[in-house]
Length: 69
Image (cartoon, rainbow, N blue to C red; front, side, top):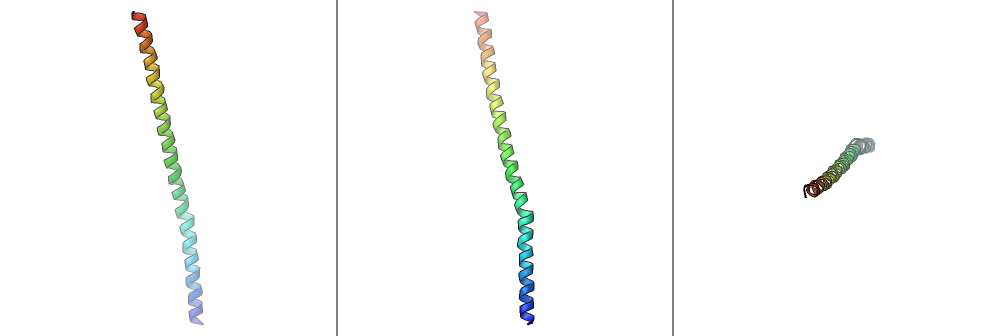
């Protein structure tokens, strides 16, 4: 009978451990994944901004070169 009670107690503790790991580990993992995704989006936006600036610079230099001819 004591063994059965001990087994039930260990089972309850194991379930609590699994629940707490799911509750506290997975959200932080999800948040870190979201942070990585957001960082990648910002990097992509910066790259696009750099390309736009380079294109604009080329257009302005072309205009200046045509005016100087």
